[in-house]
Image (tube, rainbow, N blue to C red; front, side, top):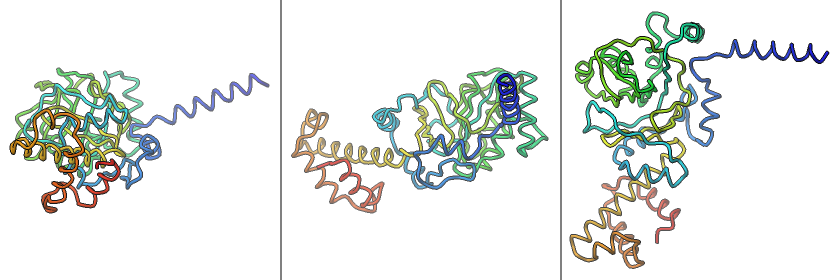
Length: 312
């Protein structure tokens, strides 16, 4: 009887595993991964951080974002040493992840069958599947395991499709081809490990919107990315609002400090160390007179933040 039960359980588990293979993560799984987010979500379950916050995030310094995340226990969110298509442009967006691995025929067959059962396009290669689901404000982030030759995940055709769907660019821990054609796509940008004229071969897509590794960083679907010439940082969605506010207040503190140094009201040592009560009060007075129409946040957001952080 016991052996029969074990056999039945094994067969049930096998049947479950055999039918459970998915290319794209389910909304329920993505919601579980990002359970600390309390705001709106996309149909696929990813947190839908507002476009306004995405725009404001572009002005946050990489060091400020990194310091904020590290202070909250997230020490593995940054990756640098990129080849950037347009180094003078910053990019922010909601992450769609994709995992690529060296090709294996039996697994490739399973992935393709699973993708077709999910209604994915059968006419081309599976590297088009993540592109098909992109929405405005998304950023396509893929782990191509640092492969350059024969690891070119897109060329200019797919680059145009990516920009048409997302109005954004890509972050590939891998390579691209036809960089000249990609460079001509107005508004498109790319952070890659390199470029090569070869076509993608002996490499396969294995998942969409699952956790991936990008160099030294771990990335979840629905993270918010800040990418600029200094690197890329992947921010848990539930932290991004406060991170942006923290960065904006830091910028205001710097603006105040620079002004007071030019005025020679304080010494460099006084501004560059923990502020005295007098400097703190001067800063708060300076903030009260700051024009509302040039603040990076609303006056209410600023006051609430200062109260929460007990800046007195």
